[in-house]
Amino acid sequence: MGLKEINEEIIACRACPRLVKWREKVACEKRASYRNETYWGKPVPSFGDPKSRLLIVGLAPAAHGANRTGRMFTGDRSGDFLFAALHRAGYANQAEATSREDGLVLKDAYITAPVRCAPPQNKPTAEEQKKCRDFLLREMEYLPNVKVILALGGIGYLSVAKELNVNPKPKFGHGLEVPLPDGRTLLCSYHVSQQNTFTGRLTNQMFDDVLDRAKELSKN
Image: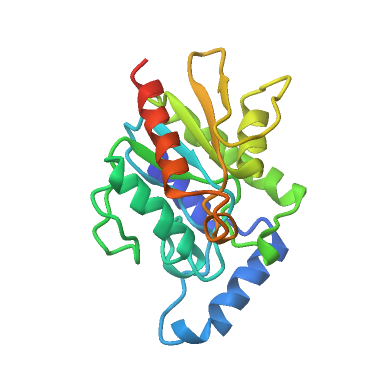
């Protein structure tokens, strides 16, 4: 068993009836601007460098982003912001992510999420998160070089903190650093959602600073 096999299990998963129904409904009805495209419409696997020192944890696939393209943060505004920043920081070979065949390669970074299916209103239930948690736990076991876990948003932070038995949990905040007993660091950022980036709550400079800090911590 390895990362490839875990991703195969993720893609085949139908454990949450509500999420299965929603992701397939979206894939069938489509957004007008993508009406000529074939949607992925399945759970979205993780991707990146298996030797990565940086693990990025998001929330869940976007209905017309990753649920359409089949790759995390690909094909939507959140991904535009994220991959442009990863490119500036040297973690990605290009700034754009439009499809699984666009040539994007990550170096020293791996992207995952606590929920693998697009949820209605971007809000997975606690039970749905629970059913997905084993995937994240197993992935962490097969990423032995990870030094920094970057949680995007409060849900990503709480998911990781729970899996790593962080107790007490400091209150989530942008730039929060939580040293872990095994020497790794849990680092936090506001999520790269349009709600945050369009309003200026999360700026390019703020996220660049977080990635710079991740690089510093990864050297330890």
